[in-house]
Length: 388
Image (cartoon, rainbow, N blue to C red):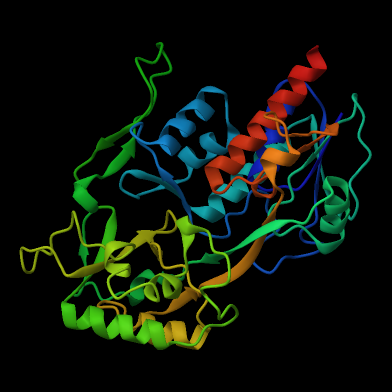
């Protein structure tokens, strides 16, 4: 029997791997008994930040990791494929369908039991009944204190942020154009189940643009930039002293680094041609479909901690979003994690308590794919140890 605390991507993947190997699993998930500041539902594997699992081609590390996970029977990768939405060369999903499908699949498995309660101390673990802690960066205060005492050191941390989502019908389609950067539009190749696969499942060009692009002139960009740097932040104010993950910086933090930082970051216009001018715009904001119905779009790379009223004011300066209705505003939250190299082995076991595993973002990885992969490794490692 394996006990898993936390029903996020890592915990869900670990449970699937163990149960698929014939090992009974109990998942403890505190939602909805105790909600968090950013989760909206009680579903397992809920995606609270972006709906993107990032690049899906084999010419980058995260695309290769996805393919390795697929070949190891990853539940997260299988469900993500079933819930895919257009996102160019990236793998993005309808987040509600994704979480529901993972929840339904795990709930239906005869060897998996899901218990809705809050675990406030690290459960007892033995060789026959190991434990996986996969409670994520928003681990409750009580459990965090117990884990801090176990590992004997303070947590590391950084601030993470979430992008806003707008209602599709509120986007002015006369101001935007549809195109994927470099025209890299991706659909999944459906495998031929009657024969051995000839090679890895990767993306192909289907000839359609997957993103809505809001082009900006120089004047429009400079007006937007000025509004961002003078807007009021909701929580963290000292950008220079606080710690942010470089791969997911808030919009205003990037803006404070220089006038052109956004234009060389999430608002870069390269690979895009405005059909109205026949030229590359000075800057561009990309909108990515957030669900299969296509009625919600997220602002790519626009994670922010500005106050909600400020977000509405500033983001409506973007061409095409002058009358945007926001389904969700951006927000910031603090992510805590252990010093993985010092605390954990390469199979995610706590060095001085090998019957206890950590997985997901609390182990020090960052990103949806990496979190799920750590759960996959922990689940397989436990089963491998049991066999020996």
